[in-house]
Length: 88
Image (cartoon, rainbow, N blue to C red):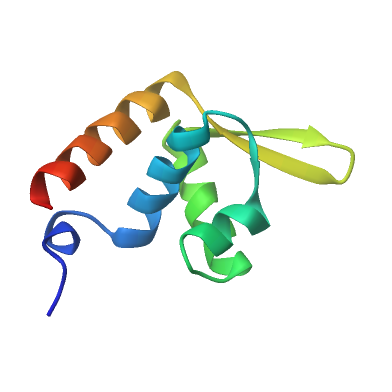
């Protein structure tokens, strides 16, 4: 049976935003992918879409990109997390 949360949101993108919000610091894409249980390549595609929507930004440190929420992304993540808690 599907989780009620899945009715309203695509699970992986929503969980990525919530995961980024929890620690409120920049994260590596590979770590984020593991946290939401998806492949790195799938995580990258989702993150690119989230960047286009202005919800996340990438900060390059040498060869590594760190991902962090924008102000808009923080607000969206808070709302998603609130809805998720209400459905539990």
